[in-house]
Image 1 (tube, one colour):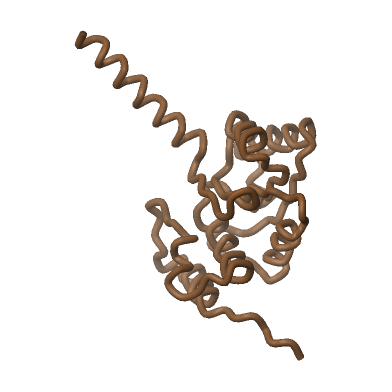
Image 2: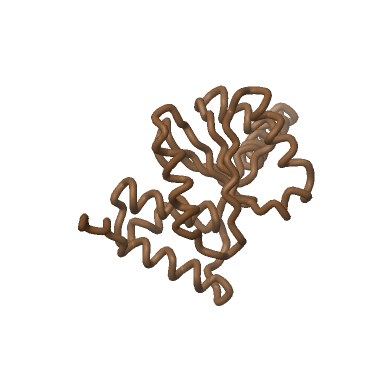
Length: 180
C-alpha cells in the first residue's frame, strides 16, 4: 500500500515537472489568438499546433542565439513540415522593442486567420514587453493592469533593466495618437 502511494506521488510529481518544463512560462494572452512562452521543445510545439491551433510562431530571439542548442533548427523544421509561419522579430535582451518591432507583431495579429505564439528564450522580459505593447494598443489595458501581462517568473527589474521598467510604465500611460 505504501509503495503504491509513493509511486503515485512520484508519478504526479513527474507529470507536474514535465508540464512546467514542457510549457515553459506559457500563458494565454487572448484565447484563440495570442499565446506566450519561453522557447518550446518539439512536444510543446506539437501541443501548441494541434491542441491550440497555433499557426504562427513569432521568435524574438537574436540570430546570435540560434547556436545555443538545436532549438531553432527544430522549430523551423517543425514549422516547415506542418505549414506554420515562422516570423523572426529579433530583439536584444533587456532592450525595449522598437516601434517597427511592435508593428511587425501587430501585423501578424491583424491577419484574420493567425493564431500566434510569441516567445523569447525564457518567455519573460522580451516576450513580456511585446505582450504589454499589444495589450495596451490592442486591448486598451492601462495603468497598473499592464503588470498582469508582465509576469516576472522570479526575474527582477533591477538597475540593468531600468529601460525595461520605463518601457512598461510608458505603455501603461500610452494612448492612441489622435487623428490629424
